[in-house]
Length: 332
Ligand code: TRP
Image 1: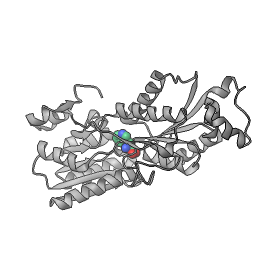
Image 2: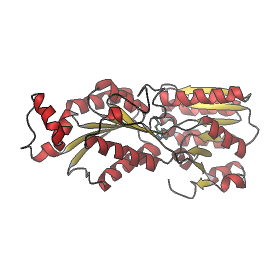
Image 3: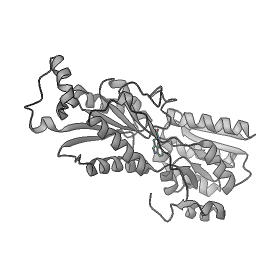
Image 4: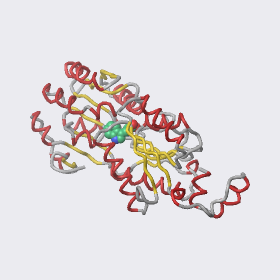
């Protein structure tokens, strides 16, 4: 933080920097003026790639061009906890000015290595339940960012409109992703209040998805996956099982519908990426993450995949079609 302020030469901070006995910033030149950003992404899947591109595009639009006045060190952890740790330790060793962490596990890993360097998280489902911040309005530390929380209850309401009368809901997710656990808890509360059953199939890595999906397909009327990174990164496997078994698959994110799941009521990740970038820019310009409220996304939309519906012989009611974006026909 101190170093970042020094680089951008905020006059008001000069006194404080000097008082701490650091060298002045007047004469710095060349690479010293380039803002260093560490960008860590948990894994590759459609949504996270979209978020990353949206962040980088917005930074560029606002005049922060990678390789010119900003240097973005993008690292992907391939869904391995040990990689996350190595990547984040590397950012600290490189003394980056700000870390952008895409996903909950990436944010948790970054928080484990620094409480000094500002961390701007992107798409953390439930920042409170995941212990990323304790107060959304006043984060208080070096960590703030954007949340992509969605409501299991609203998605189940949409499921009731499209495929009414279901009684048993399968929950497919990775139990080590706290982002997913939080939403599955909500799902269980909703089910209990409405006399429905939840059957859980918790995986620990992508190789278990096929079998977990098959077992749920035998027991459940519908299946739900929250914004789970492990499921999202192997979504084709899950879709194939559920389409063949004739079990409607509802999900937490538009990208998963684009990739073949039936429907969601979700947020716009392009906008989420832009807002993440805006927060990064504020911090580059001297804002204190401690005082920057976590941003949640307001504009929710119904997303459907008409191709999947057709493959399964499901007729999507006109009332849903009227307000839905059909991702079999449109891009994200
Ligand atoms: N919300 C997820 C997390 O907190 C990250 C995420 C963003 C995601 N978009 C997604 C996961 C789409 C699955 C599908 O880690």
